[in-house]
Amino acid sequence: MIVLHTIADFRAFRRSLPSAALTPFVPTMGALHEGHASLIRQARAMESPPDAPNQRGTVLASIFVNPTQFGPSEDYTRYPRTLEADLALLEQNGAQAVFVPSAEEIYPTLKTLDVPLDSHGLVTIDPGPLASRFEGEIRPGHFRGVCTIVAKLLNIVEPSHLLLGQKDFQQQAILRRMCLDLNMPVELVTCPTVREPDGLALSSRNRYLSPDERARAVALFEALTTAHTAYQQGERRASRLETIMRDRLQARGTVPQYAAVAHAATLEPVADAVTPPAVLLIAAKLGATRLIDNMLLP
Ligand code: AMP
Image 1 (tube, rainbow, N blue to C red):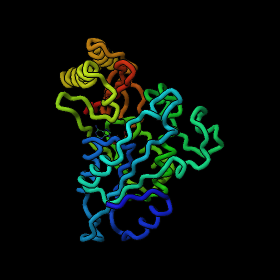
Image 2 (cartoon, rainbow, N blue to C red):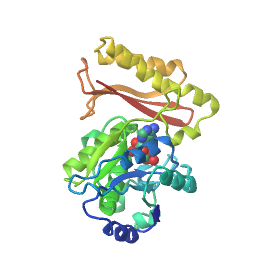
Image 3 (cartoon, protein in one colour):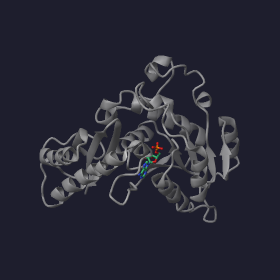
């Protein structure tokens, strides 16, 4: 596995790859876990293109804690950084090249994080209407930072496929729209959420939880599965499904930030009767840590 730190080096490597070969790409912020590993394995398993049947793809990844998607009071400086273990995990799961740039390499003119990204005089990507609710409402500027860094990475990496986790449902929906609306030549693949045995979705932020909070964090999965079961048993009132989720979150002593039923593509909240494709979206706080999760309603 080759590790590249500069844009120039990555581009030179990229140019050396056969043009017909698949180049699936998994962007990450490091602190990698089995959820990230599953994305790399899914990239590895992708078929060779029909016009080059013997040409195995080249699995590409990046590790970059993107400062511009964190709010001023969020955890940018204390976000876990575990580079050596991350590189080992990527290599073991089949990544062939990893881009690990510095913040200066990516944002040569960014001076402070205390002002919105677009106040730097930088050209940024407007995340569009899907960013107005849920995470976008609670974390102003977050999706502008996400779209901007992913657009930058796509310009540098030029992958055939972009693999994202369903875990960050709103993120993958917004990035899908970005690629569509900006005619970006990449195919987006959403990969299933990997969970702990009790159902807690793996997240780099789970390591912030105290043992007591970790035990109560199962509330998110319980809330989703309880609402999902009610839906399967015929409950179609969005308000009822939302109440079921909130009750579950509160019963475990977590503080719900939102618990909603939304259209799976537009993320418009469902006002009354739920029709597919819909998604249950939740965010809750345990102490200082916020966790998010989601589940599709078939
Ligand atoms: P992050 O490093 O948190 O930015 O995540 C990098 C990618 O891994 C994103 O596409 C996430 O959605 C995905 N991811 C994070 N956690 C999981 C998980 N538990 N299962 C599947 N994918 C995940």
